[in-house]
Amino acid sequence: MKKLQEQLERIIRVVLEWILHLFGKELKEEQWEVCLQFIGFAVVGVSNFLVSYGTYALFLKCFDFSYHAANVMAFIISVYNAFYWNNKYVFREEDGEKRSWWKTLVKTYMSYAFSGLFLTEILLFVEINVLGLPEMLGPVINLFITTPINFVMNKFWTFQGDEKVQ
Image (cartoon, rainbow, N blue to C red; front, side, top):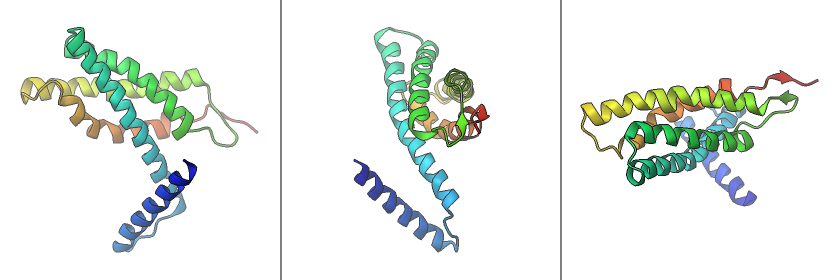
C-alpha cells in the first residue's frame, strides 16, 4: 500500500510540475506539501461526503425527516467522521506541537457549522425552493463550494496546535 501511495504521489508531482512549467513556474517543496495535504483532505472529504449523503438520504427517505432535519443529522455524524480522519491522517501533529483533542473537536464542529450547516442550509433553500432542484442534488452541488472553504478553515485554524512543546 505504501508503494502505491508513493507511486501515485510521484505521478501527481510530475503532472503538477509539468503544468506549472507550462506557465513558467516551479513547484516549491512547501507548495507540494500543501498540495499533498489538500489531496488527503479531499480523499477524507469524499469518504465523508458518502457518510453525510448516506445519512441525509437515510433520514430524508427512510425516517421521513424534513430536508432541514436530515441535513442536521448528516452534519452531526459526518463532522465527527471528518474530525477523526483529518486528525489522524491529514493534519497530524507536527514535531513539538501539542493540541487538545476535545478543543480540536469543538473547533471542527464550529468550522463545519459555518460551511457544512449554515452555508449548506442557505444553499439548499435556494437550490430547492428558488431554483427548483431536486432535494437529493443540492448536497452534491454544495460539495464543490464547501470543500475549499473547509480546507482553509481546518488548515489555518481548527488543527493548529494549542502550544509548542519544547
